[in-house]
Amino acid sequence: MKRVALVTPPYHSGVVETAGRWPNVAFVYIAGALRAAGFDPVIYDAMTAGDDLPEIGRKLAEIAPDVVMTSAYTSSYPKAVSLLRTAKESVPGVVTVIGGVHAHFMYEEVLTNDGDAVDFVIRGEGERTSVELVRCLDAGDDPSKVRGIAYRRDGRVTVTQPQPWLTSLDALPAAWDLVDWGLYEFFPLPDTNLAVVSSSRGCDQKCAFCSQQAFWQRHWRGRSAEDFVDELQMLRDRFGVGVMMLSDETPTLDRERWERILDLLIERDLGLHLLMETRVDDILRDEDLMPRYREAGVRHIYVGVERTDQATLDMFKKNTQVEMGKRALDLINAHDIISETSFVLGLPQDTPEVIEATFQLARHYDPDLAFFLTIAPWPYADMYRDLEPHIVSRDYEDYNLVAPVVKPEAMTTDALMEQVIDCYRRFYMGKLARVGEMSEMKRDYFLVTMKLMMENSYLRRYMGGLGEMPSEVKSLLRRWGLKLSA
Image (cartoon, rainbow, N blue to C red; front, side):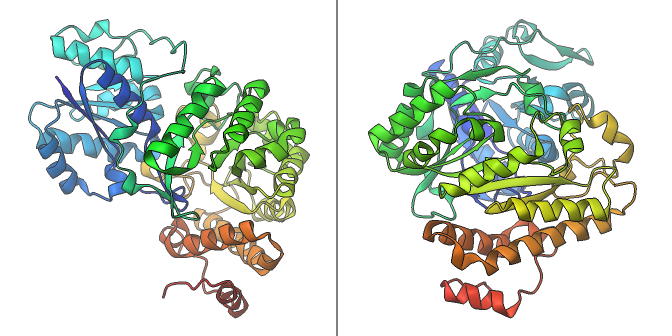
């Protein structure tokens, strides 16, 4: 057991792929840990390469791995299982392993329903467990000695003791040299490589619809500012990375550490563009730091507003007030940083009137980019019990925040989708009409993003697109030098 292939499943929902293409950062660190332990890892991003299952099978036969590992969230899980079945067919004797949030929680279902494709499930963090599992298999030892896994033994699902969290995230071995950098770019800034980076892991919140706080058990750890910024500088200097997307749920949780990160980025003047997500309360806390956000290279911030009524925010356990979302977005906009947020629609109690009220407040909040998402009932989230009676699709591929999986009591799913697409149409046509009021940076960013959304995104594939553009909008796009494809 020497060669390990880490392979992304060929799943495309289009939600995030509108913005660009980026490597799987978890694979980079798992591959680094495997290599440091003496194994031969290969990273194969089948999703970004656009390979179908027959092509994946051919490439795996060429790679000839002893172990194939993949990772899945809920909507990508069916494709991940198909990938592992293909590996079994293409590489005789291969051992298959799956990790990620979905498999972590649903390991019994995974091994019961798909045990022909899946040999082992990795639960929790992957670096230490992957090494211990491959080392155990290589030695022909008993898997029950490996912490943090589940597997079938004598026809029954067996789960071992949890793997402890890594005590330090600094100086983890990272196999960035195994990444095929030619695959990755950020579409609004296409002349530089894009990397996903991680400055921390975990979340200390209790949001009822989210998987992350449950996966990390409300446990948060941050890398030191110096270790993190050193990695960013190395990625720029060695691999030509100019855009860094933070995968952290809450990179700003520790203000002192975050402030040090900003100071180091400013001191070193790396010329990077940082894209990040954080909480609205952290933005409000950091009002005095916002000029340093901008100076450090933060160009795009997503904050999760989710809803514009306090009752639903309280049900979501967001631990924020409605007015905080508006104030946070205003702060981001005031410092010429791209503001992005999302609004969750399709709850059982939603009506056309509720959705219209959400839209009107979304327009009042005035983010640069807004996404109107349908609720996805993760089967391991706190809200699942309340949503389960209203679920109309059991196909996990539909759990992508686009397809209507939950049916509101007072609406059909078709009517819900009509409302969702109407929110998109009115929001973005309204923004386009005001594009001349934007700063040059925001205008260029927005127009490229808008073009991509209308031509390539899930709005076209899943919902039929935004429809025929008004002639005045076409004139605006021509004025700014952009023309839609036929």
